[in-house]
Image (tube, rainbow, N blue to C red; front, top):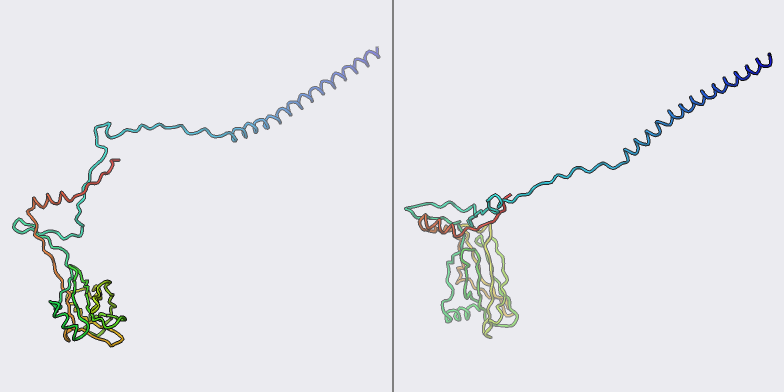
Length: 262
């Protein structure tokens, strides 16, 4: 009887140890499952972060043209050729009078030889003479032609000018006119433009001619009075037509510019 009790006791003890082992194994499995669960969730989170964002939805727009609604595709704009600084016209007895901008021009106080005989006479006396003078209209530019006696091959011609009554002066070198020689005489030309601050009303321009050769230096100075010119100021007055005709003329001078509607 004691032997049976001992075996049953041993059997119960073995069963108890097996139950404890099974319980510990169960707890360990649950712990491993709980520990592994956050690893799986972190992997899912990384996968969500690494995935590319979805593109924004495409919004379709509808384009319509103006002509579909009966409108013009372009608009016409007219511009006047007249400058904005143009003086305003004044009306007098139904006629339009426009005052143009004032301009400076030159006028001569001397005369050049009027005939070939007179020119030859002056050349025989002084070897050099102003043959002609040209004043460009509406400007302060002058161009002179000088005739000299062909004394030798090497020769130089200057025009000496002053703008302050000979308190100061400067020399302009005249250029030879190609093909102008007739073996007895030669032609030279010079050009000068009066510029500000001397380009104003009342400026006095004087000059004389100097002819240099190995045989000597010769002068021409309008018989001792010099060649004198003055600057003058004038305002052109333009008489227009009636107002209706002026508007017609203005309309013809307008230009068109095409500009697309937005």
